[in-house]
Length: 392
Ligand SMILES: NC(=O)c1ccc[n+]([C@@H]2O[C@H](COP(=O)([O-])OP(=O)(O)OC[C@H]3O[C@@H](n4cnc5c(N)ncnc54)[C@H](O)[C@@H]3O)[C@@H](O)[C@H]2O)c1
Image 1: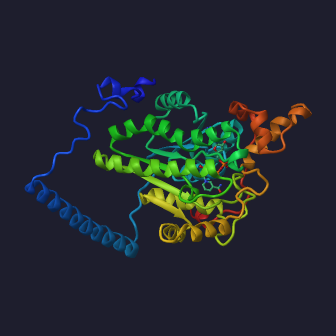
Image 2: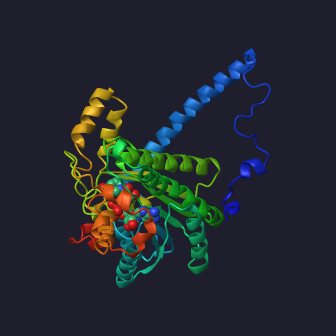
Image 3: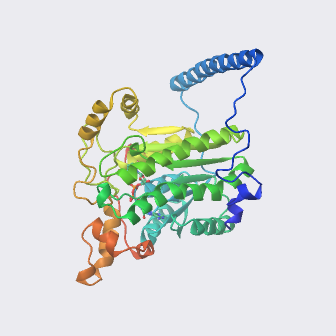
């Protein structure tokens, strides 16, 4: 399985090993007059091409803004939603199910998966769930194989599962930092490597990265989370460019970067100012729209694009001050991911008082095996349906 996913290919193909350099490296030969002239002409042509393309794309966008963006149908797709056992993943699964998409849910929370599958099916949709720990690549590759045989080729991959530790860096145990990276970004490599080849073969596919605004700005108590989300944003952008360069322009990628979302359990007690925390149903509606319109990046709320542009314009003193005031405390009680905490608490209710869990720090020392989560409950979002939900 490892070989099928191209590990060690570089050495098989005879590529240079790390550090190996050609004997001529470092010896620059001066350019002739004509070579110099050619490189200048090429540079000017590149700039002209950039300006012309930019005008073309801006005009195209203005046309779409005036007359509406074309939207694709998703009713023939098979979608995989990681972390679909609760929160945003569940809401996305429900929307996709209602649109006729075949929905597959991967999560570590068995009870959460069962609830999502039941909710999608009760609404008339197709949904199947599998317990998969996406932080383990062998598990991902194995589950992908099972999926191919039992359901078919995934055409819409939504890398949604995410975790947060919510503590100052020096208080965060090493394994929680590793967990943040394994779930929030490394898993995207494994799922993409598992499903992209068939997308390329079928000349159709869409890979969605649920990142975060924390993938564009740093926030205190979220050092590991922000770093992993910055990586997820980079993963999406580099992958998109690579697919374009390789000519796979029929494979779309979308990066979703929301501000804090209410009620999913991940950041419920966040202390944020000025930018209101988001309604999860609105975020789910926005994600579906972004997928249907093949948007490259969806910043939620949209006006935060303007705030992000300030980051590169103003000195750090201004930017840091703004960020400190915007999110005074991402995890005031040091319990960022309540949904996971609730699960662990339920598990510990049956355990001896010595091992009972009261905070995420206790979790880190008490429960190290995510497999334990598969037996536990999840957080249900209870609220009246949003406009988008009623329309669907
Ligand atoms: N909640 C927010 O404020 C917020 C803001 C911006 C971005 N996001 C991102 O949105 C996504 C969804 O978050 P949410 O708010 O719905 O959180 P959530 O905690 O409700 O859902 C995350 C899901 O991922 C699952 N999961 C965790 N580890 C896993 C693993 N190893 N393998 C498989 N599944 C695993 C959990 O069981 C859970 O069902 C995450 O990537 C998150 O980082 C959330």
